[in-house]
Amino acid sequence: MLKELVSIFRDQRHPLTRANDNFSRMLELTQGMCLEASSVFWGKRQSPEERTALYEKDVEVNKLERKIRKRLVAHLSLRDPPDVPYCLLLMSLVKDLERLGDYAKNLTEVADIASGPFPEDEVIGELKEVRKSVESLIKEAADVFSKSDRDRAVELTVEGRSVSKRCDSLIRKIATSEYTPPVVVSLTLGTRFYKRMAGHLLNLLSGVIMPLHKLDYFDEKAIPPVED
Image (tube, rainbow, N blue to C red; front, side):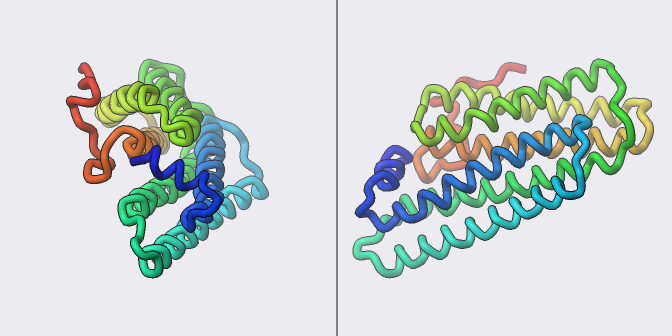
């Protein structure tokens, strides 16, 4: 399904090609926003101007989503016959990109809760590993998607699903910790937002792996199970 959509994007005569630039821009913006937000969560100082710029990027992502949706609706209404499967696929994928922008914005806001660096211990070490995995997904997802690289998409999906399990385990550990309330809140929210970011990136990758009716889901026959 995705390979056909990518070929449509590359065909300058096809009406849906016009949505390609907007979709690529959404990918570029959300990738940068997520990486920046992760750095801010871990202590990078964000100036008021930098925060405003990130919020403006989120607004741009939202506008691009609406533009793509409008073009898809027009295509479905006017073209005979319309490319229904590809429109449905793209309609779903742009929503995941929009949500990535929201969670990036939310992650930067967590930095306002706890002052000072996090303590160096096992829980923080595990969360740093989660960060590493999610940032790897962020950096590779756009390239894997554009190349329709199914093998790498499967590998990243297996890694991403393990992130979800690790986040659930981390939240339980944080709940029974002796951290101060601000640190507990910050770590819990940060862990949750990393999990959700990974989830939407996996939804994007599912467009490379799964047929349209299984988008956002993962066939155990196609993807090895995650070991506990």
